[in-house]
Amino acid sequence: MTVKISGLLLTIFLSCAATQACAEDSRTADPSTKECPDLTGTYEVHIAAGVDKFAPFGRRARIQTKQFATFQRRGGGYTLIWHASRQDFLAAARSLAQRVDQVNPYRYDVWLDMMLRDPKLPLPLSVTSEEEWFNRIASVGPVFRGVDEVLPLNQCKRGWFLISGPGPRDGPPDFEGGMEGTREFEMWLGRDKDGSINLKAEEHGTLLLLNESMYTPYLAIRLRSSAHLEKWPVAPAQDLTPIRAEELPVRIRPPRPIPKCQITGDHYAVFIQRLKARLPPKVEFEGYTSSIYYGRMRPDGVCDPTPYTVTVSAPDAASIAKVADYLRTDPFIRQIDSQESQVLWDGRLMVKFRMMAAP
Image: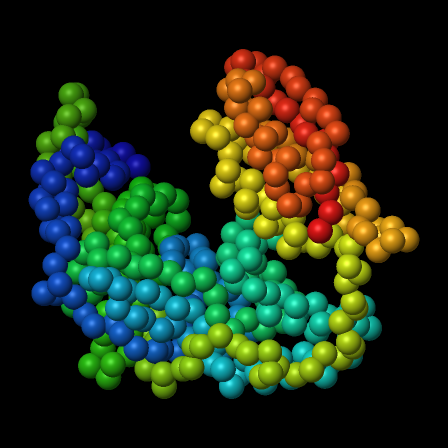
């Protein structure tokens, strides 16, 4: 917005690189532990919907029970653990086990398999991140613990710990009484006298007075607004050890046995992990088949391989040969039937390996 005032044009915009005031502000960003609050502890979390768009809150699992945050020291900063209380989580699991779901009678069993998945195994290939995995669990049943967040020490100021920003924002205000238009946005955590944690938002903008004819800065004025968004009361420390199978209700139905020759998601997820670790330099994994779920057993009890396809791109034929050599030695691959090659626009080779695989 531009307004003519006494021969000047008044413009509000973000210009930290162009003003002395912002340059002075940037020098205060030196991390210092002298002004840092001690955030260690466990707190009951209340987060407004609008805050979810800012890190680190957007990665929280949508825990169905009361949510807690535990801060643990990590160097000069913290590890932030989102979690439920063990008691509430187990109560929610019992409720899910007792629920009669006409649409999905195996809902509890599906949730149980997801909850007890070995964390050392790679994520299913259709899942892109831990955050997505926990949200998938939350779509079926309760979540005990989400993705841990690392909060490094970037800046402390008068007892406040910077957790997000500064970052550019534009458009309508993010909170009541906040700035609109272009500004810098920050989020801070601090401790109250009663031990609770406060979440505060701060915004900074620059008011430039411009010469009407020259459109050059005449005077720069820093603008600031802040608001206390949330207060998290202190909560008792929680048991965060992994949930054990014996703590959870037994299955409503016994698990369906997996045939000896059935290829499962874990089989190919581990194979892809091995393959990616062994790819030569500049060779990229492009895709894989999805039709490998039907294992068959021969009359003599030996597993009959099933078709499986992997596609890679490489800078030259020598790199493709190294990939083929590895595939011939991997325990998941029984044989390579053919290689289909094409030259890409940039000269790289795209090769589809048609193979036979078995667990």
